[in-house]
Image (cartoon, rainbow, N blue to C red; front, side):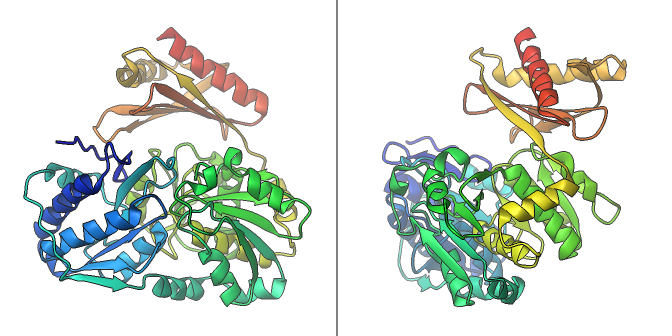
Length: 479
């Protein structure tokens, strides 16, 4: 019996040794049992789709057939589909839930399964735990009777066209270059822009099981081909999506990487200052506090645990204009409470088109003068001692006592507040220290799966960031 452990966003596993036709069927049966346990849910369909990875289409078909075998109508996408498209139609078509076969940004040796709620975002921890509890509890039942091949893309495009100002993009004459890294985004962003008379090109847009020998995560070290393709061209900016196209990474015109922290700040600025979108802002604790300049009674700013699921939890409950995480996952109140790399590309294009600038480099330079520079850095420190998972609960208790005594400082900066974050198992696995002054903080997180403790810091200069990080790693060494 293969052990199956779900994380905060479903299941990721090695192809063959862990995730296989047999184990996918086991998960599908557990998921079906969960749906059938809910009042009225089994009378509604479940949407199922898949990315470009090896066996993704096969796994999606198996999952749909198991749903069908359990009396649940399965809407199976007619082809490769990005996760945000699957999530959108799950809500739009009134489905009980959605299932995406993908390992997102993980290496190509992995595949996995993401669960999506009827609200248009990720499953809650409680919902995922309920599915996990059903593993191996029932015999697997399969049929094709209730499997319906469905076009998910058309209603998604219709939704995008109702939100984005394509006329402004078209009239501006700007052009966008999109790198799909062989993932589920394929030509979708390019095709939506072109359909609306806008200029766009794409690279690596044909499906690739190994993502053209790249890691499908849209971060600086993986986007050399996009940077090279932008060099010496008239594109306004370049954007890349990850393996299932729910994340976006950005490069400036000319080919230089544009950090996610700055991308988030510009998107929030545009949504609040130009589009005047109502609602608050929710960000993971590793995102810049420069965003707090928008904070007001009408626009609260929420700091949550790292992981978009925690962002979505707030977006489900409160009016939110923007929800974002450092890794390039951005959700929008005007769209869905879910990461959407395709939509984010469209919004970036609209942002530039509605300004007096025609290149992201010019736009960013102007806006960051007003918004302020971001000084931020992250360190991943190896930690092999067996107390890795108990380290932060103990440290949090010590620090809280010192804060209450008024005797807590780090690197010469006095700590004014501490916030802790809990893992899916209810254990402290994140500590954020806020120092006196604005935009000064340190976040310490212990990985649940790797022998790593991560340190994130923001300050008012690079030197301040270095000082804060040095103080943080010194805490680790003392313990």
